[in-house]
Image 1 (cartoon, rainbow, N blue to C red):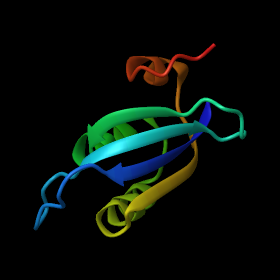
Image 2 (image 1 turned 30 degrees about the horizontal axis):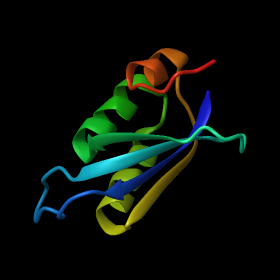
Image 3 (image 1 turned 30 degrees about the vertical axis):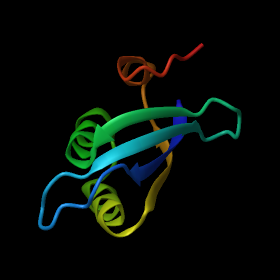
Image 4 (image 1 turned 60 degrees about the horizontal axis):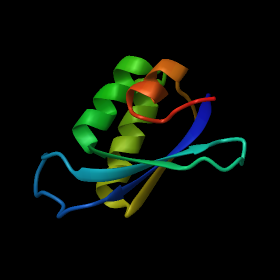
Length: 93
């Protein structure tokens, strides 16, 4: 399923290279309703995207930078498997 990923920091930004607590909104890319909010942190999110998607490292590096510098980082049109979505609690019909 193709989705848009939108992060929002849920805690103080650590100084240095620490992980940032996040609220991840998963939204269907086709414009249908179905937003799902998933609590995570930046390190876990980037590990998951690296292991479970075919996104190039350049895209992940840019997204990592956006998470650190923007109140709402966005990664649009990401293909996530139904299994991964189910594992994080987003139920696909």
